[in-house]
Image (cartoon, rainbow, N blue to C red; front, side, top):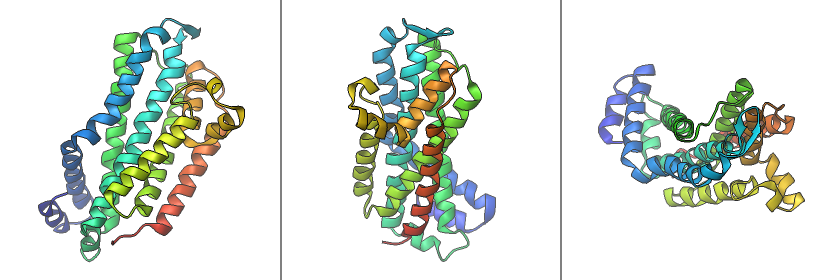
Length: 259
């Protein structure tokens, strides 16, 4: 976010200020090439690497292993990398450079900056999901989930849970580099336990049960069930909802507006 963006935003208020800050946040995200490309390119690479074998194995009602197993992991990776790694790094930059402190004495509150960053990263996540599914559908004949409603519900809760974890990372990390490091540790930890590097059969039973109630595993299991037309396990809904609520609560009580 540039100084001119701050000055322009503080000249107004309400929705106009939010719109100006969203535009500034979008420019910052676009200029951050790695942060823009990796959350989309990495999941696409994983999908393409597994598509040829997974697409030939039909599981149920025309849905293949690509639909039921690969795409849920791809969706979870897109949401988690943006929510847990990307977003916290921007917020800690603003705190480190004093932007949030300066905005605290203007008509535009620091909360407006947080809202703008969440909006922009949410748009990025939705675009990433749309790109991933479009490539899968066009190139590998992927199909929509059998139970589309529960699938959309899991996506919404997954975004809420991952972003809540990201806000916790932003509230605890003292520097932008620390935010990236902590975010990556959290991402790879819950991803590894949630099946990002292999199915449940590759993990000990105890570890698999732990991973299934963490947000990454809950997202993958919930989407897999919805894609196959099965009832989404209650633990998926509970895990994601509890993570979203607790994460938001922790972030709200621990977030520092200044260095």
